[in-house]
Image (tube, rainbow, N blue to C red; front, side, top):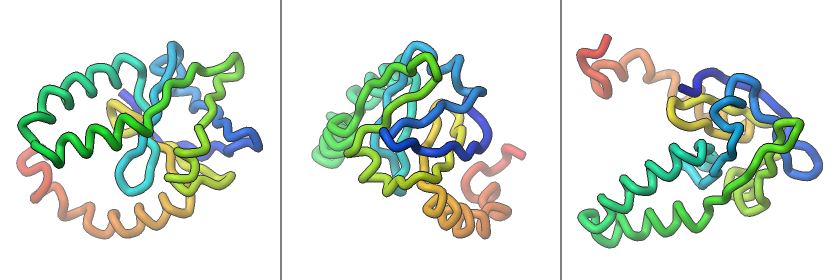
Length: 144
């Protein structure tokens, strides 16, 4: 399970060093894709394959919206293998999508990591945190 918040830097070649706590999960490769709120979602190869299989089973029943989502999601996805320094390159199309600059925030989101531009993450966090205390009753009722 991927947990925590990390603040790596994007180097001049568009690479990021994977957080040490995520390296075992991502040692055999990662798949990066467009995520919601202009984040980049990062999955292990296995997790991504399982996700796509589930999505493809549901897409026909979701109609055009499901097909559109699947097309957009997969068309921006890319596979990367970490180098010996545990770096992966974030392709230009994904860096542009997420508005990435040098300062990044990487969060663990359970089955995936998310890469955010730090300013965008801080803004998102500030907006979402204000409703966090009340969300358990609406979103995850009875869990706590």
